[in-house]
Length: 351
Ligand code: FPP
Ligand code: MG
Image 1: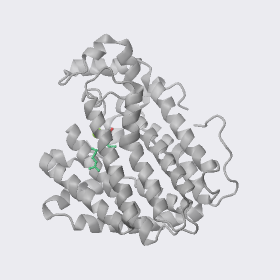
Image 2 (image 1 turned 180 degrees about the horizontal axis):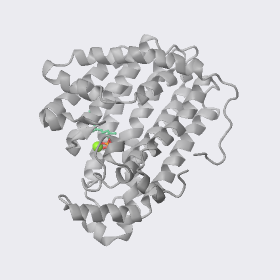
Image 3 (image 1 turned 120 degrees about the horizontal axis):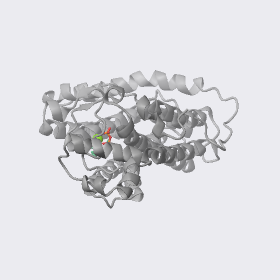
């Protein structure tokens, strides 16, 4: 997909000079995560290792390591600071997913059985707590500022999850509420990833840290919108987790809003324990309402703004900034490749 009015990138940057060190740092990040998992209580360790090794793409770790290079002069992503920052972010991410699956009573994640489904809700609660504590331990290796940053991010993540719970089964939820949840729930972590990377790099200036934080927030928000989109347009086989579950769980997302506004019967179905027939009706109504295309366009707008932050004046024109500029579109195409072919006609512009 191409975007109109795309700004020119810094010409001639050698991206291998950025991506090579990131790829070399990733095994160090895996080692740091494995050390944290090994130190968990024996009764929770195997369950956490199962979830940690279930096909995550380490997108967040890569962002931390690239942001460190974009923010700091000659920052080495394989240095202990950026490695600890990347491990901390991946561990918080994992903790939040373990707790999210507990809240949603989700049976699978990334193709693996969830902790709440196998070991039970108590184990999931405790495992999430331990993973979060392990993340804080990693941040402490960078310094007090890093701990404060991560602590604030966890509070915002919880605020997003709490807001989502508060809005459950409410037909009067609007786009503003949905976007607020997406920004808090998903924008927060990627914003923290970029800022923590910057904090772990020597010589980062405040303007660059702020720009990286906003870049991460926009990218994370887009990620959540695409996740909500895939809930109504993908399949469990493509996604590795259940689909068609948001509305049935009372979670109102952007794709559902136009149908909810137009269809009184759909509004009446915003309650627990729908029959299979009611679930099918709800999904058909949502897909016919035009919300899929609207959500896709909102995600593309966030992606474009994120990219713009890397190509404008906010960041020094380095190969690392160019590498970050390429991430949003790559992510968009990866997510859109997970749309089930039968649902592609719901998009006005899927190449
Ligand atoms: C997935 O969203 C979940 C999140 C992005 C974060 C949820 C945050 C919490 C549960 C707060 C607890 C935080 C910590 C650090 C312990 P989703 O349900 O929309 O996506 P999914 O389809 O992948 O489940
Ligand atoms: Mg969930």
